[in-house]
Image 1 (cartoon, helix red, strand yellow):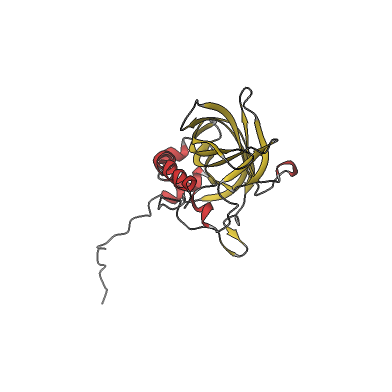
Image 2 (image 1 turned 90 degrees about the vertical axis):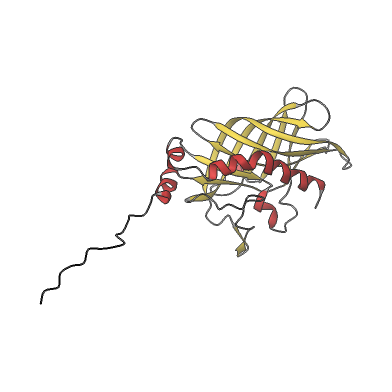
Length: 238
């Protein structure tokens, strides 16, 4: 396993996993208090179990062929435009030399455009895609959740192991559902504030949004009606 995959797993376990666990285990009160909730993966978790090397990490290049490799996970809510997400990044030169590596944390959901649900998204070429567990978290998906496509734009902060932190805009495109022609290429884009540069050539990487319908999740958690364990015997007429 590469150092990038190890670092990515650690960050998702330490930072993103508690958030996802809280979301996945949310009760009806949490579900009913918000609008539309999504859990999302960016070249992480079970998306990396397919054996397809282009799935993880997500790679994007600039005009001069510098590249960023990114993985991460999180949750977002559309009405409040809130997001909690984190992951790892690696910046490489044109020749593949690692220039910097570190973690990123989402600070704001700028926008989200849904492409609709994609029921067959977890099946590729007639076989199950990935495993039923979510990376290091051995938990099931939310009852009533459904794979979906969409375009999310986040403001993030990159925190390198060495050097100063920087702010950027991260675009995550999951090309499933009713995808507009201009967003048919799945992948990520990265644009730094100021003169940090723009990375807009999607090279690879798979992402996925999991839509949770509040009313379905609440119904799925409703307790079953109780039955009498010791029914009163009825009198039998002679």
